[in-house]
Length: 242
Image 1 (tube, rainbow, N blue to C red):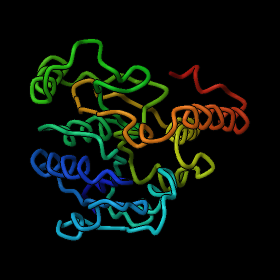
Image 2: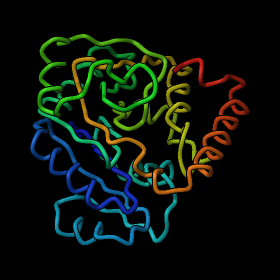
Image 3: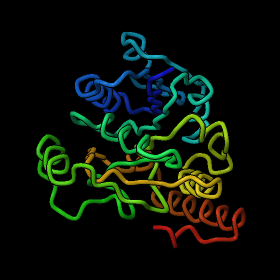
């Protein structure tokens, strides 16, 4: 269908999810469907989603980010698909701007925005003020400014269905999360697709919300483990693309 399937994985982030969905509905004018995959939350997430007009996949336990996203991908009907963190806030023109970049050339496979919080090139180098000002600033000064990159971060990750059909789902070996987005970017480039950063689209990212609740040492161990999994799989250190 000529629409974008927006997939949001969530675990005990009801308050963040509510703000995220509110922003999407306020600022999205391109056709879309909204799919929430809940990873066994015990907060108010399910009650909220049941009251809202969203497609809800409710899991009995936390399966991690890659597996949750794959559940949503199997259900998605759109010709474009967007994986979105629950701790993201969008502004006017966000989706249409990213879609313009995605469909500007047949070999563009994945597009991401600029933001206040991300590793690599997508993080802006000016102080954050507020969402509206930042979105207007980048939309006005960077209109049509799209930069080819080798890697995009999965907090706001737009790609074509044809890419999904060609390279498949996220690799679940990286569950509960970290480096599954690097892996997908690498697979897309191996399949002949280009990746672009839409420098004229700004979204706000709270940052690492899902992992802040966990023990910091365990998170470091997970990052190191998945970093090595990427190297074992591809024989390449993903840090060279950051």
